[in-house]
Length: 115
Length: 112
Image (tube, rainbow over all chains, first blue to last red; front, side, top):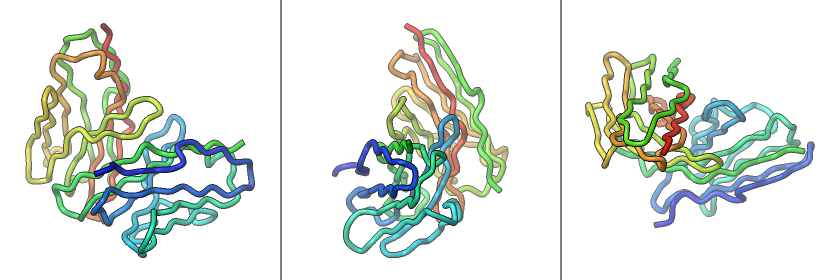
């Protein structure tokens, strides 16, 4: 059972371009979470999705950011018109169900650099 | 609003020493608490998960405890090794969909 797969591992974008980050959860996991780790800061929750539904997007900036988890394929975090402040490590996590004993498993992250 | 604090922010110890990392949280209504390890430039590796009904979990040289009433957890590392050098993160899962709220981490350095 492969772990949580994120790609690309590193992404460089010029200001104003779009960034698309992909996350394939572990097999059997239907809950996906995106987190952002800014330089010198801790991990912050962005959005929680189940298949075809956004459950909680309270941590996601209202503009330029969007996320989806389609019925088929990976979850996508999309950042439009990137700015230097978007440079960060973006991590995806998945878990099978919302029960006490279910661990969240994280991917290796995508490190976005905006130049 | 749940807040998670980790003390100390950084810790340097000689190899072989036993050590304790601390985590505190402000809202005791948690589903579970998870300890992670993060190596520089890498993702997070889950170390231990303590459910809200449990008081501790053990894995090898690691032991994590949970005291919900006081809002505290500790991660005990026995006989530390240089390979234990990493940042250790504590996170709690609340009752709002299982999202994790992280502390700032403790950066551990174990000197040979």
